[in-house]
Amino acid sequence: MIVDFHNHYFPPEYLDAIRSGGSHFQVTADNDGNPVLHSPGDYNVLVPGHRDLDFREKALDEAGVRMQVITFTAPGTSIETPERAAELCQVINDAFASEVRARSERFTSLATLPMNAPEAAARETERVVGELGLPGVMLLSNASGVPLFEQRFWPVYERLNEARAVIYIHPTYPVGVEVMEKFMLMPMVGFLTDTTLAAAGLVYSGVVERFPDITWVLAHLGGAVPYLAERFDRGFEAYPECREHCSTLPSELLQNFYYDTVNFDKRCLDLALDFAGVDHIVAGSDYPHMIGSLDKMVDSIAGLDLSEEDKNKIRGGNAARILGLDGD
Image (cartoon, rainbow, N blue to C red; front, top):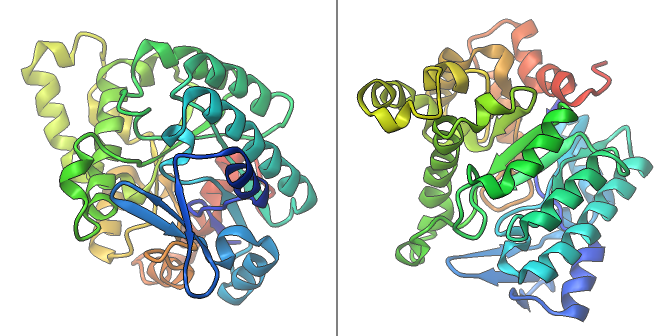
């Protein structure tokens, strides 16, 4: 069974809401009639796979993918005012939960939260893990420039810790995005650095140790985390402020994170495997973004120097375990 942990979906209900109720996105259309959402330094062309699950299921069948963990994407609702963000998150999460109920053999989902409205985010967390029954949330790597380790977000983590839920960290606009507006540098470089910053901040701040029952998953093979983990340990040993809230070597904490395979280079995958182990890698495609690929996800896992048993853990076994899915 292949479970694609990293992909993105825009529910039609969300698109209707931003068209009718306003949004900070600039919405245009391409020559094929696909909606295009524009934001600073980035844009998303919403091809049918982004917004039509019937179309998507055919693509999954062709690629041999059994399930997807559908999530929203950057910049999410953080581009909106706090009040509007809270409204739109409810629209998105209701739509996700409805699709999961209707297509439970094909999709599960991680909720999106209005982290630029922390009190509303805490309320929505309670609703999505309680009333909607989703297995966790996707958080963007910063909340409108505010680090995820800030105490204003701890009520969110407290509820997710109680639920033994998943937090999937996906990058968004990093601070300093204005220097990344050319050559698509923001999604190609800025995203990966911001994921790395988020993970390091959560470790050094003590959030990871304080909420031990959260399962943390990082997008894009963790950005630079496997590459920089040894440097994080040296910082822990060298700088007192890195030990003020954290009592465990950062690499030990980060080896308990999970990493999706959206870096299809075998050398990078091998590094992540050596760092975190085969039990902590999950398949990801970044479908249907222009830079994503279901086929590259499938082929890159097939090309690893692992037993079929271990490849199957990456293909779907690890995701099934942490999300409570049927692993058949």
